[in-house]
Image (cartoon, rainbow, N blue to C red):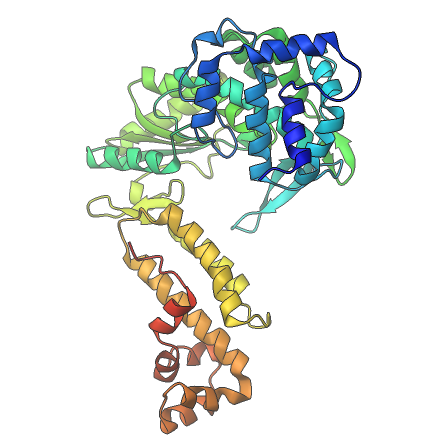
Length: 475
């Protein structure tokens, strides 16, 4: 339920009249919002949003007749954007404002901000730059815009998405309505089963940091984005970044972390999609991850060379030679999945399994002192989230091994917690005197003992099921 401040904020961003002097211009904007397309509003209310780049799957009749900036500032669009930003939550930007503080801020300041947006005088704040750890030990930069700029970016992204959606290639799956990473993976699998047994796995080096601003603006202009909205988008591209309190200019790239970035990424890479289509290639792309399927290694080498030249010469981007390769699909991973050698069945990639194990190791550190019930509740969130994505895997044996490994980690955790009372705990749970004595007096460590018959008997599968521990292998 929305509280009074949040309801009032939604009214303000939607063009409702605020307390204070009667502003004739604001009244005109409100009337314009009220007569805006009912078709757009109904679609907006009915359709779920993508986490970052919400948009509609169809292009309404009014897309060419109503100025795009006016659509950005339209009541229904702004209310959807505010709702989406509040759902996404996220950390504060450089101004320290939290998502929960945004509605109250809009209640007092939106009319002035809206006037700046319409006049072209609004200037976004620099993006806060943080480094996010990667599984290989390196880091990647992530931009955190202020919550106000996330709200405005979201509103822009929704409109740009509506405008471009009918023109995006059907093999582009990232950050689009009714499209998903699962569909991209299935597309690759279908190509493999159709006889395309080699993959050109292309990685664009530092893609989000190297997008050419001028080419992006030209692309947007070519689709009919008017000058006022182009200027606003350009201000976001060049807003700068704050690194440890020092502001640096941004002359290239779209900062990862803002709602607008995924939509703009698709606009840039849409050129690549249609070039691959023109050449007759089978492919699937999710954001900057692209797999092109071919029938021979020789063809793959040729495609790799020609597409690399196209990306460099036309898109002014660089293919990373260390992460790109022509190989058999079972030797590569795509969006966390690979395929089996026989039958091209979907299989969770080893790297994705290891990442899950790292998370479980972090939660089950034996020094945490958390009760087993609380620990299982934490594990449940992580495991169910992981299963929701990787549950489509058709090779289930690695998932069964994960389930066994998780239970062993929990047995190890409990054994360590029991300490000197280990013998009594085993006896209480039905372990024989001999087994309990030998286990409790063993010189082996907790991890070794977690695989003994005594611990398996004392802490059986049903014990963990009762606690609510899910099985990732179950269907």
